[in-house]
Image (cartoon, rainbow, N blue to C red; front, side):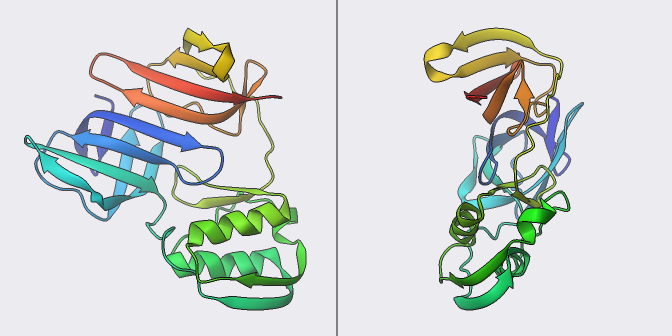
Amino acid sequence: MPVTINAQPVVSCRLVRPRVGAWWGDFVVASSDAVTGAASIVIDDGPTMAGFVVASRSRVFLDTFHCRIVGGAGGLHATSRARFYRTIQVRTVLADILAAGGESLSSTSTSAVLSTQLDFWSVGAIDVGASLSMLSGYAGAVWRVLDDGTIFFGSEEWPTTDPERVLIDETPTEDRVTYGVTAPGNLLPGTVIDGRRISRVESIVEESRIREVCWLEAA
């Protein structure tokens, strides 16, 4: 199996990566030892991903550890500090929101968006993730947790990619395609493949096969 969590082998997993928001995955680890806190997911011939184990969705069952991991430092459900701002840049508000959850901003975030001037802005005592969605919506931007656990905030560039893959199914009525791949994680939301924009990728890793299911957007 080409996936490990904190160096422990994974039996199977389902990894969901949306274009907006946090990626998450359900994993079955070949051990009765629980994984807690920060989790490093290493995919052979694929990415290394940094996330946090959701304790309420994780437990040992039949000598294997079943867990849910969410991208980032585990602070997206922390409560933002209520604040009111006047004449301030998006980057300052964003820094305060992320600090409330111990999350980090990606260096790949769009500078022009971060420099957007706000005449005024208020942050309520709500989830960090909800605060990010409100701010990004107003700024005409998107936010998502990247593989390295940092948060991208900015404009989509829609780069074209061409990873190794084999088309095995397509459902035009749902704008969904399924590829067979040798390693999960190389198809990314926010990219263009075969002239079509990828909105969400679901990687399904089983003992005998690996599939990447992509939901598409109109170009």
